[in-house]
Picture 1 (cartoon, each protein chain N blue to C red):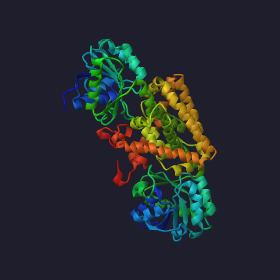
Picture 2: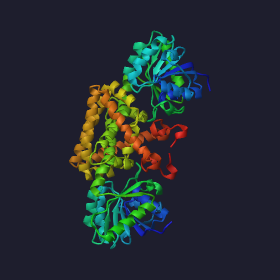
Picture 3: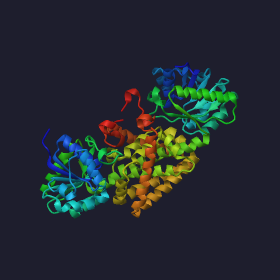
Picture 4: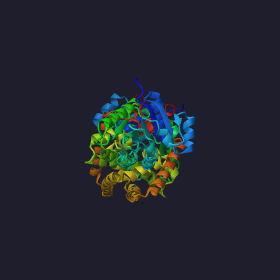
Amino acid sequence: MSGPVFSSIAIVGIGLIGGSIARAARETGAAGEVRLFDASADVRAKATTLDLGTVFDSAAEAVAEADCVFLCVPSGAIGKAAEAVGPALQQGAILTDVASVKAEVAAAMQAHAPEGVHVIPGHPIAGTEQSGPDAGFASLFQRAWHILCPLEDQGDAYNAAVDRLALFWQMLGAEVERMPLARHDRVLAITSHLPHLIAYNIVSTAYDMESVDEGEVVKYSAGGFRDFTRIAASDPTMWRDVFLNNREAVLECLGRFSEDLAALQRAIRHGDGDLLFREFTRARGIRKAILDAGLDSAKVNFGRDRRPPDGGE
Amino acid sequence: MSGPVFSSIAIVGIGLIGGSIARAARETGAAGEVRLFDASADVRAKATTLDLGTVFDSAAEAVAEADCVFLCVPSGAIGKAAEAVGPALQQGAILTDVASVKAEVAAAMQAHAPEGVHVIPGHPIAGTEQSGPDAGFASLFQRAWHILCPLEDQGDAYNAAVDRLALFWQMLGAEVERMPLARHDRVLAITSHLPHLIAYNIVSTAYDMESVDEGEVVKYSAGGFRDFTRIAASDPTMWRDVFLNNREAVLECLGRFSEDLAALQRAIRHGDGDLLFREFTRARGIRKAILDAGLDSAKVNFGRDRRPPDGGE
């Protein structure tokens, strides 16, 4: 095991992801010191009780001596968090984040980062439907992708900083990928944002069926519905911000989804079994590709697939 | 353990469900003899190799001496299967099925069942995304709901037959519920049929995105998309028939789903974060209800939640 990548890191926002980074950084030795801040006094108290690191009463104090600062707040709060920490950041420090949308978040961080601070947007493809500091666990990032979206033409010092940040995530067990901001937002719109929107929507639709009561929906949810309720249990604030901050890409996917759904609806109405069979058969292929890629549940960090050691299925 | 509920059962259609009933019936002793038929010679050969029971070369032979006949074919093939076995059914025998839609399937069975045969439509809320005789396993039905939709005003002999069939499913480990045909089809349209249609659709949409290649969709599927691909891997023939045979209820749910989705789309376009937050928060409630009801993964038989003993996650 090599020494710490950063002698000191600061985490602003102690939720599922922030709390997991704190745990993983200490457990793997990827960081020497872990400094923490959360806007909520209750969460700060909880983080102290959980002994996640050194908890400070202001974001500025927390980041003051950190080599790398992780903004682990919802994407809509990144600007405010960056503004709070900006003046206190050390020269040569890294300012990164873990938000699910990158273009708008990168702009918000750049707007408040002083000259000489390296802004490196990032996104761990890991999580569960739980939230809050006690939902975090050290193994959350193991064998999960971590996407870094380095800014362009930043020079050698910046590129060296990106390599260090990549090494940090690798020590936490993640597989690091690099991708342009806009591409990240397009890819995640279809692989994550649209699925969550659809899941939230079908749960709402089920709620509002007069002809079926909620008890029945719950009781027979094993028929497929339950799979949607799990991701629909994700943090509402975080997801509201995702859709507001990745609007164009999400609306593009949503438009296509609705067109495709209208075609299936028409096929059902007109009894076009051939079209239905063709579409359903096609869908099998991509599932097979996921299994072939070794991305089946046990190997990927998301939702049911990862649980805190004590909460395993 | 009590004695067999039926001295002899016949299973027509040896897929995931038929194969699982055969295994479970012998393992639990719920049936004395298990007689099998499948329209495919390959499947019959496979069933013989797997030693699932006595395999016959015609449906009529298979059902000739059975007290209870299980039609385990896709709902669109029930009529043909019922027609094939009808003349060979014993007086007082039970003719049941396991299809996901009930009203049309019940009518098809009634059309071909001779006087004195008890038609009792049924539906086990259990399965995996696998299909075929080797996909079956004896514990598939344990702690799963089995819905029986008895016909009305059939008299005492019929009611006694329903009780026997319920007892059989209980011996296989299922919890038996009774519900009218139309209600079953309405409830399952929202808890199972619509979720599957949505899952198939989102996979198709992802396939057709020019801006994102399939490799990326697969690679980053842990962000939520993968959950949809699992149910979208279900048997295309079975699901084509479900949508063709439960058209009205599915179209009703689908219309509401599309309206609700349009409202979310509009909120995203116009930046209405309050509406999004409200809807997303609401969705958490039903997930909690499912967990509170003890219906979380480990306790319910569907997809990832149940695996053959050798194939556990």
